[in-house]
Amino acid sequence: MPGVIGIFLTGEPVKGVGPQDVALSIIGKVYANGYVKNKVMEFVGPGIKSMTTDFRNGVDVMTTETTCLSSIWVTDEQTKEYFTIHGRPEAYKEMKPADVTYYDGCVYVDLSTIECTIAMPMHPSNTYTIHELQANAADILHLVETEANKQIKGAKMDLMSKLRNGHIWVEQGQIAGCSGGTFDNICAAADILRGRSCGNGAFSLSIYPGSMPAYAELIRNGRMADLI
Image (cartoon, rainbow, N blue to C red):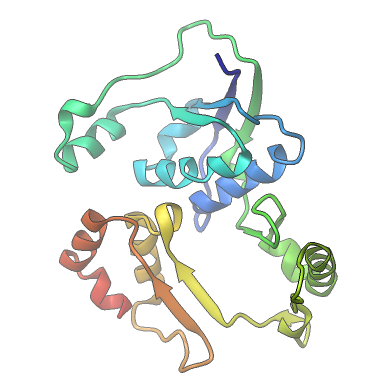
């Protein structure tokens, strides 16, 4: 039987912090030291109640980047409602730790302290907060470029050319995948972009919903039209 690591969540995410930020913050702490490698990550704690099911899903599907074996979460009324909305009420089961539970280790996460976070090449564990990157863009890009080119054969990564007047020039954005392409994420993007422009040729934005039910609902509720 694999070891089980408790991921004890407290607090709640501040506005603007998404599931990728939470996942990357955890990955950045546990990947290099192998703390959860080939173990089960069990998400527990009062902080879970502050996260929608979509938010939890967005964190969960990124746990593979920690090299854990699998992950599991406490279930609650939100989980039950999610299954009902998706036409599978019979699939819901209550799951929670016993009153006294023993773990092989624990990771404490105060969700209220998580900042917007970016993963740089060459692995999702190479994380920086957005504030760190903005404040030290030249140093970080140079370091990442140098380390990446030690690994790449037959080509060269050029990150320094993305630095213009001390700021990073962003040319492409994607909202996609099982973590980024969730219904809640894309609705948030629609709310941010509604009535605005993402540029005329200088920046390209691609959005791929993570499932057909999410895609269908985005069309029904008008968010897809807003994004287009």
